[in-house]
Image 1 (tube, helix red, strand yellow):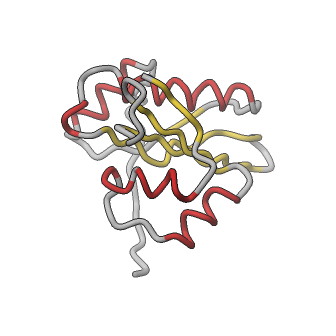
Image 2: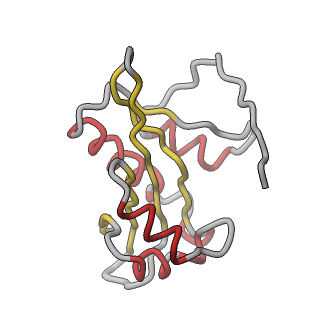
Length: 138
């Protein structure tokens, strides 16, 4: 397996089958060109089609410094439970450390066992204190 940072919209488009919704070129371009936004793609056996991705966004606060928000993790269903998700999370965590982040976090739907397993295997811990509140503007 090879993990590479996405730097072009064409790379993001090649991972379109992994996203929840259709990719929009202008959003992909904005993501890739915004400081502190990161997207890594996983490839198997020299393949040209990504089998997984992880995205992260650095967040900064005046009294806390910088932390990495693991925005999304996806692995093709046929490739799950083979360590790809774990490897992607570890790559993002390594980048977070390199960039001086004090930590990394992710919100996960209760009962979403596949990503929970990946996060745990990469060293993530459930602190048991989080409730997610959402606002839907769209």
